[in-house]
Image (tube, rainbow, N blue to C red; front, side, top):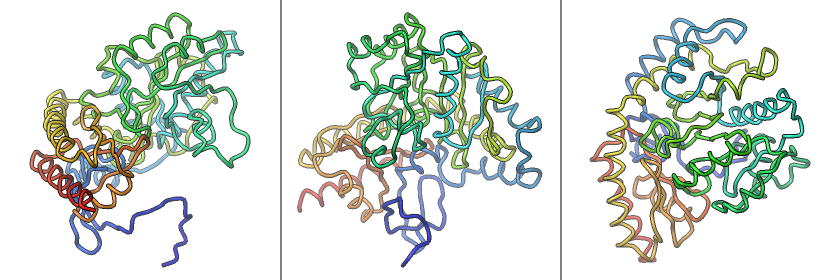
Length: 391
């Protein structure tokens, strides 16, 4: 069937009618166990009662007014986020890509207003993914994302992942900031060790460079803490958030210290839709649930259960898997076969997964996944691997 939708996606031949919790039901009635969660978006699963209630209640009152006016729901959500984090201020966006654009602008404006306009360079790392706008693809510097799109935004330098000496050498007097994902998602579920994150914070402090953390995929409880950097006991100057914060509704944010954000005065940035009443009402419901320590403790418990099962799975199917990796419910299976082959085979067993770089298949279930769902996921992965091994 011909489609009028621009063909920029290699879509699976699947369409879904409805979902509940960690399950999706296709238009033909087939049930699938969802380990993608909309690529780490549906943090509370499908059709969570609290989000349905928040959507209906706010939708019946007011959807959008623009940022020409004070938005009470936005004020409440911003206060919650600053109370829970390092941040003093929040700007709301519609996506992680938009959050990346503001983070870049904020870091450069900081140095411009501090009297050092030459400090424009932003250091990033191989395997990074910060979105698909022209600024974000320039930051990641991946040929796959940049080829054919002409001149890119200047002022970025991509460094080898984990090369501490390269980082030290690159932190020159023209560097405005270092931008990093504590756990790379698209890059293949690659964790930055706590010691490295602490060392990075120390290097930024020593050179004055701002530290920007991209927690679009690894944030909002995904690793078992509200934000992944909390495991290392350090804080950024600027942080990008999206995906899970809206629980499936388009919502993102940039959180920052007063120092890092002070140059962003009226007129320096804006968004028509960002932080509208409907988005923030849902965001408030999400944050209320995920920020509870009892909820995060459950994420950690379920993560340990899942990890134990993956360890056994890898051991049983050494022809298919090399290892597993990850933190919390941000997990990856490093494959000895093409990741897309595993994804497609899994669909025949009613299992939804998403590929990543470094020959990895991501497992990004809803944070509300049940123990029984985890057991079923492991069994279906086992069935999938057994079938592929027999080919």
